[in-house]
View 1 (spheres, rainbow, N blue to C red):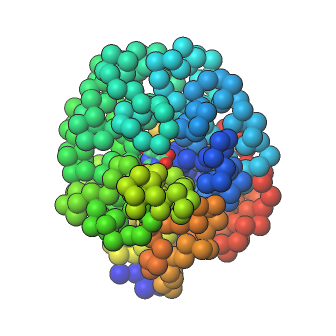
View 2: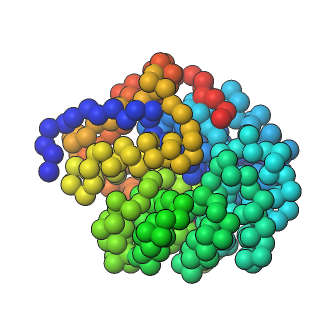
Length: 359
Ligand code: DOR
Ligand code: ZN
Ligand code: ZN
């Protein structure tokens, strides 16, 4: 147990390749300004936005509209992931230089981008230029189908927000086999279980991948060295929308940009992983996988072993103002962020202007 507060620099700052800002189409949940403010307070210098908007990012026009809306309104750098369907595969060549990854949805979730058959999946994987990786939302048995497709097509595959012990084993096996697969975990799956979800109001623990069993959660920690990166999967919905889970049909997703680093620093403090591994998972490795360079003038300074403080949903910058970690005690904090030599977060307060770049 760490007792002295220590300031540590994360070179390049944190990079999150998996967030859902809701612009255009659902800005009552989040927009580029509120989303990047949340990201900045959370210690990120760059994030990649997912394609599952009401008008999904699966045409060159939808992509360019998002880039236009982001320009001038973002506090940190924002890149875009393209939605992969049979239809959009016709446009991959047209957008490859303006996106960071392909995202394929193999299970039903928010949005309308589901790809169900292996035949379609194979076409999509084969059409994708090999410059950037393919990210998949694949739960349980579908996880294995995604790995099989990576084997068949030789594509670099990134498996999003894994949560199960069985998925952990599949990753270990695929890596042993030498397949180009990488794995991502989110803080909510490292810290919470299905029992927690049962006791949370407002369907606040309802998310896909679902919160799993204590055994699953433990398997993630036991094999943390085999997990490449941590992503927030920041998926804002309003409290009123989440409340609909009381009738069994609310939207899935939890916010995470402002809680991930404090929680992970608390885990470092408790000795669950090393600070080196955390820096690797939140900056070095995502930059490597998604081929995003950084410069020496961009970094995040965090405090490890901070005096305990309590996460309070009403202090959040995200428009959704809710988190399953409301009331959690953490012992880590994001202090300062510099972007290309300009201080944009000072002792936890936003001091910069929206000078982020569209990647
Ligand atoms: O819980 C989730 N929410 N999982 C997803 O895959 C999508 C996300 C969202 O966009 O709300
Ligand atoms: Zn997902
Ligand atoms: Zn997601």
